[in-house]
Image 1: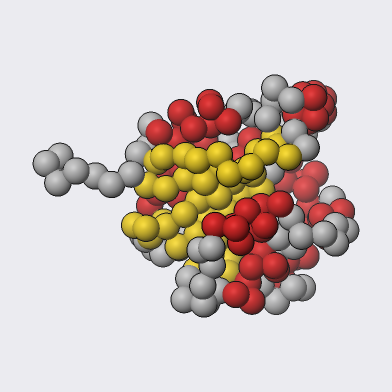
Image 2: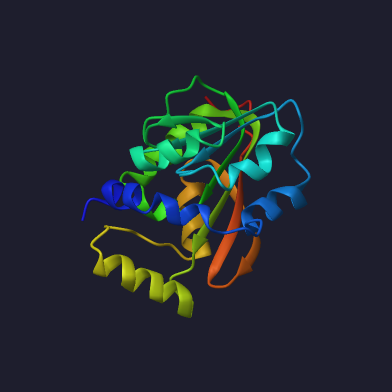
Length: 196
């Protein structure tokens, strides 16, 4: 099944939740939001999650590959861009914070996406990602359901996820777990002056 068409048809559903998302609470608890920063929500869909953050930062952008999601997002007055994580149409070191909620497992070329995030992330920037843990009961249910829909999703345990990002010079910190999901923060490692 073409996941972009599926998510375009389901865009209305992502606007239902009224409660603040756990990823927003995790970002708030980090204490990193400020009025001079730029934030990118990759796979941000309708902009529901970013709408909690946008009033507190200088620039807030959603990038999503689903035209239906982007159509819903524009109704919020948030800057929305049709595009994919593997080719982000912004300059190097542009964003101070990159967030993803329930998105990474959908990305086709995950390693290229990490490279792109590294490229557009400011040197002291943060990446905060919420994902399902396939070892939990709820996570196994999500894995099964997405296999049934033939979405081609690939899930990682927190440890596997951390190891994947380490390949690209990021350190990961597990911020919280909840309801079969986990939220992880990544920061770029300092590169030694003695290395090329």
